[in-house]
Image 1 (cartoon, rainbow, N blue to C red):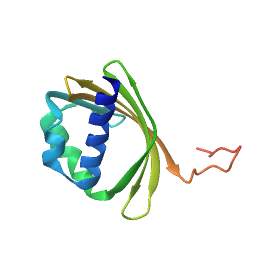
Image 2 (image 1 turned 60 degrees about the vertical axis):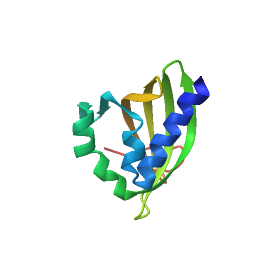
Image 3 (image 1 turned 45 degrees about the vertical axis):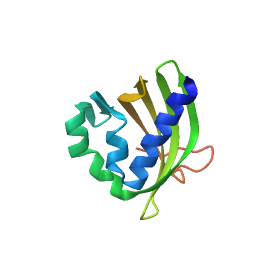
Image 4 (image 1 turned 45 degrees about the horizontal axis):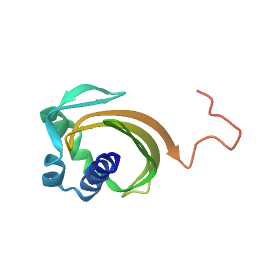
Amino acid sequence: MDEDRIAVARRCYQAYADGDRAAIEAVIGDDFSFTSPVDNALDRKTYFERCWPNHTHFAGFRFVHLVADGERVFVTYEAWTHTGKAFRNTEILTICSGRLVAVEVYFGWSLPHEATPSGFVER
């Protein structure tokens, strides 16, 4: 069953990278909720209005961690854009009965990291 949830998660990211709205719409549940540091529990309609258009910036994803735990899949990925920008994020996906019902996004850092090894960035 964990493999099924991981497969759904992979399909979501692939649809986003491919710009395949039909593929993502087939997976996202009607009761979908999307939360990030700048979005608070967006519903399905608002997600497609606000977030989906960003797919045009992404060239691909590389999974660092993809771990299922019950209904949740914990995903850490490195993504890159068509302009060469790269970053790492972690997301928690809740998948019920083969449908994505919730996403929590936790912003990571730019790649390469702004700080030198063993260093930090002054803010």
